[in-house]
Image 1 (cartoon, rainbow, N blue to C red):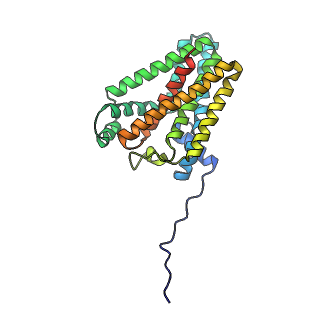
Image 2: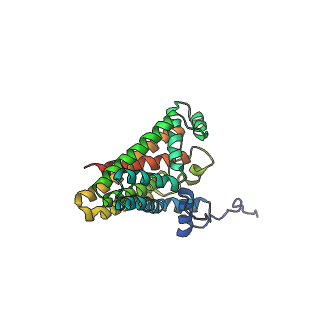
Length: 273
């Protein structure tokens, strides 16, 4: 009689993360708002990246407040737009803008993937990064100027829609099948954690919510708001695919770049018409 052998003892999978764990993960990694991360594992990252649009909602609301207050106090739309653009940068310690600059330097370097990734890890910013930062900040400010000049309601709504969509782009970039470019860092922690059906459902939910929020302004505004979300996600998807081909995966810098590109695209579409 022989003993049966079923292989080494199996390690039980980590328990699913609660909504609170996911929210702490999202706010703790994507904002400077006080949120103590209680878990740093794949289940927490999965729930956390699904909660990323919620973090965007809070950031957008906080960014819109000073802009609206300035307008109500008699300031011009340009000042309100400039201050509004500065708030998300402060609430993220500039990490998304830094990621945009580093990604631009990596893409513009024309180096192999490993060398491009080393360039992105450097603390300095190259010419491609500087150009990307200047263009994005100018475009965001100009678009918000146009929107605030129409009304504070349109401006505030645009800020919130852009912030939520920016974090939604991160959620979609965390979907299954998107590999990390490095074995460490935030990119490795969140790459491929969000199931595709969840990512698709969140994209649909945010699109419908953006349209519904703009509906009191009118049907054209609602349609434009939904189009802004879809156009922003398309722009982020194109950049994501370019980065995956170029760097063999995603990094934390790429996530920051996706957020800024998505926010900028959304503001441009909302400013049209």
